[in-house]
Length: 282
Image (cartoon, rainbow, N blue to C red):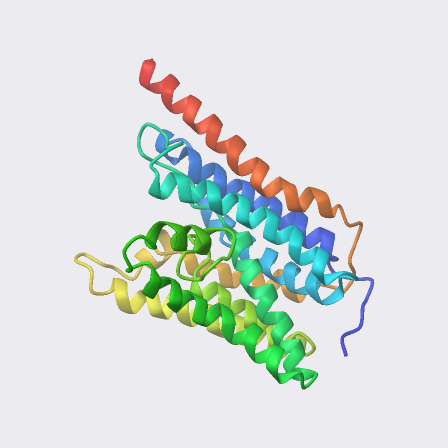
């Protein structure tokens, strides 16, 4: 059983660090076209998504009302997913250079919360519910692929998979590697050294080794590209901050962390749009 300690970083501190790194990453993401935002903003930003994932695991474990916790995440994820669907498939709300944000990490959290609850049901020997909750999201992804090929079903099915009933094949942020990393963090949450080691090995294997194998076949690839172009694996560095977690919740500010995500995405996007038009008119 994990115990709390005074030293180290509490949950609020971890979320604050993740929030700052996320904003840096997204400033580069939205304003890269200007040529003035340094690449290292996104390099450091690789640590933010794993930290938010780690904090979501802790939040799900320790919340007093999982249903309310889940519904809050679902509402934000579904809303943002619907907007992304319109941008992606209806070609609306796109910047004049055809850029549009693909940020939707809350949909990953929705899928994971269902599977995490399933894991707990299995541990409690509630096998029917447990298997349904764990296998359901996996099978739903394959069902979306199959149903989307049927005449007349593609649009409503993909909309559902992108928003109200998120499917891993439709989520535009995070990906399968991120989802499996979330399962690893939850499965071993009571054994911190094993939890962090397993997550780090998995993430490094997928984001460094896996990417290296694919990228090495590209013309002109050099090993240094793994530090300048294919730097998604920098996310492994988040394990250091995770290891400093002291098990304490901290001051909270939960509403800030929930609503800041969609707010800052659309504010930055709108600002980048305005700047793009201003530069074009100059």
